[in-house]
Image: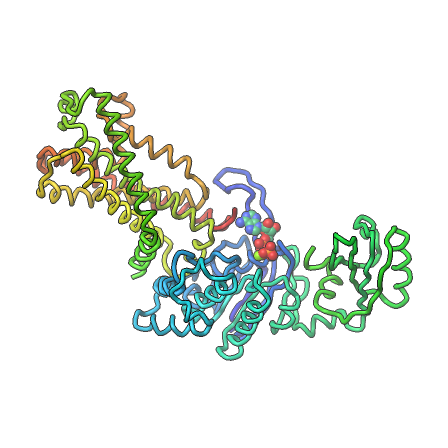
Length: 324
Length: 267
Ligand SMILES: Nc1ncnc2c1ncn2[C@@H]1O[C@H](COP(=O)(O)OP(=O)(O)OP(=O)(O)O)[C@@H](O)[C@H]1O
Ligand SMILES: [Mg+2]
């Protein structure tokens, strides 16, 4: 049995409240995705803003009704067995305000222990263990509002472990964290999978994070999975190709549109007027690319060979960067 | 019990800031005084024979205090949903709760109960204040006899408020609408002036509001009526408990289905 089994899952949001007899337009957010996650696997959904990552997680955690397709968590159907699923999973939702700021860390966990039906006899021991695990035991009685962003996220993770879930869903777990907190969170997630044998599905739009952390990655764009493999497997898609980064001044996006090559803007230094372009360009093509750029009025500052990364896979598949 | 946990959590957050509790009590008292003094100015004094003949209570402060306290309590569950849920929806804590295996109806009931308890504490203070400042005579037996009616009223208020639970989830922001409704109830339930000065249509409408019957019953007890004498109001309350719990529940299930299509968050 798979931990997560998703088949042809679809979701459209209504633009207005879909009251009976009311004609409403629908926005397609997830357009038929399928994937399977094995038990004990760390699976990543990688995609840009609006790709449909959060929508997918909300459907799988039974918070949102899908429009079509099926999904099973630990063999339970998300439509029919929501309660059974909720007992066995947990999630860290997007954003920093998913817990009560006017309660302390301890009070928060105590509350969630109760609404997850944790036996009272185990409650205190479990909360203490979790707070120690995420390094918040010393601050357990401080109100969450006085916590840093990183501490809040660590508490959100502790809450997500309160029912000792078999499957854990994490929506952009490092978004907005400082570098150190992000490292802590990534290492923590990896340990959950390696040592506690938990299944984790996380979303991210940081490709380095996906590459470093995940056993397998589904790249999702405009509600569709456009590639699914191990990080190494994905990088094979651009293996042997020459990834080039070109820094130019006075670049205009309009002119890039007519380019026959898939180049993407990876950085823009607005102050100095410098744009960094990146893409797969062969040795023969390089002079032509440079020539076209110069003709468009851009000034070339540097041309550099790079090691292919997941971002290049994304550029190759879509012609855009994850940040677009 | 998850229900207890919800109440514990809400009370903890409410009473964490004594200044806020104090200001809530102050608002409650100021509001009361305003209405009582305004009413007395209109009536031309504290005692009104007109009021006495139409309602049985001639002493305006007694009349208004009972109505006011019950009005405040009657809108409490509604406020819990209109403001309490909205706050949690906005912040994202609502989804964190929904994701747990606890039933959503239990979650909502817990929230409304918490607010009802907090408002009861508040109103006990306001009531005591009113009794003292207006020199209203009150016996222990009146209080004791009011208690079962009060509990029955709470049941009706909770059901009535539940109608708004679904609406808030679905529509997200109905605060302004709810506020108009709350103040309409002040007028349509005979809180500050007798209902029989109202047009017939409003008198009929007022019968579907639990507050109307709750106020009539408790005022009856205050002038020494027996349960038998206020039986019509009690019957009405029992009926409304059934109706509102049923209607509220059905409406909520319907709104919940629609909300699950749109998403709980979403601003
Ligand atoms: N409640 C909603 N109602 C209507 N449209 C929505 C709702 N939630 C999301 N959408 C739309 O659905 C699409 C997918 O959104 P989703 O939040 O799933 O993307 P995401 O991959 O999580 O993006 P991000 O990186 O910004 O979090 C977007 O176009 C978004 O505007
Ligand atoms: Mg998202």
